[in-house]
Length: 493
Image (tube, rainbow, N blue to C red; front, side):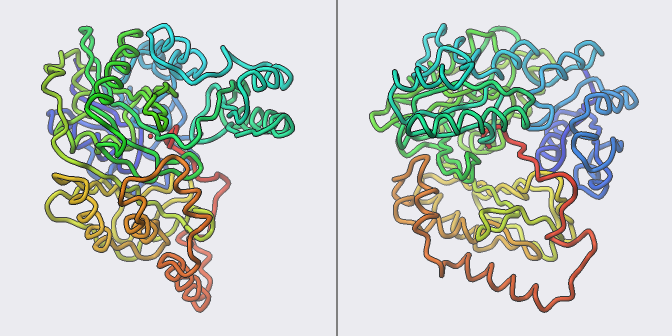
């Protein structure tokens, strides 16, 4: 049992955790880097402590600094949120050794399920279908070539410890495989400190559908239906929704049962997500498991009227979950848009800078998770997401209509964002009809008209910038530090 939680994260997820703790009567400690001193999670926590400079490696990713902050403030638990140290098994072990509760699964579960090859082995043992591919790590290009020719092209190379699209290459023949193997291996080593790769057959035009899980310490496991996360660019999610346009009650039951088998196989504790690829024939295959709360968890919370972050904390406190699977049913159609500070016209390049004006949409069925405000400086050191716009309604059609209205009300001035781009998508006939798959956004961008609303707005911003005296201060949206913008969600989460 504990009465104080240190939130080892920043931005909207840190604020989300602080709110859940407050409703549970728990004190909170915010940690922050120098550049986040004016962040809202710092303002609303009961205590705060600076843990270092803006570089994530010297602050939010440094276990020693996080543990020291917890010990100084007598925090009995640490909630890692998503990204940063959320799926770091070594960090979870350090917490245990210091008698600090880690709000998440056990170190063993994080380690086994974070290794994508090991996770596939566990799922196969649990009777969950996996994508045809190598039985384990592929040691060399020659080994990969033999397996690829047995499976048949196209295939996809993946990093064993990967996430966020890093260390992944699609190959259509032996020549591409040789180039892809070398590049993906190097990229994986640089990104994750682990250059190992495995290989899978590429499923053409699938849906990316994930099942939300929750397990307690008493052997109880529950699933909360699906989220369709197929609208992605560079394997980073932009839009999520439930129910999935391809879902049927029968398929949801089958996928839910398969996910529960996986959770039971490892005795999973806390919140987790099993991700599947679903083909045109509604066959589904295990892809990976995320051992943390997902970025898109509000989709499930609104559809099922639950609080997954509170449940995480209650499980860590040793409480039994009182759900009954037969009673867990979706009550609403829910859609989420990730609002990012990015320049769509320049390949979604992150655009840090100062928010000069902000209007948050409201009204029935509208939820916005954010930690920005007018005058806030979006730092260049971290992820580019500034808000999540979550809409719920009785039907998908009503949710789409409400989303268009909310996007019209959402105003962020000072930096380019993806708001106008989302408006385009929500007027696209195929998306509106639910006719999309993982490749939808790639196709859309190739055929996107140059005179789209987003193009006009970006051009206007650029023209305005040309007549403004160049600002060399830290507020300049174009200024970058020595660190690139981090990708904080493993598949995006």
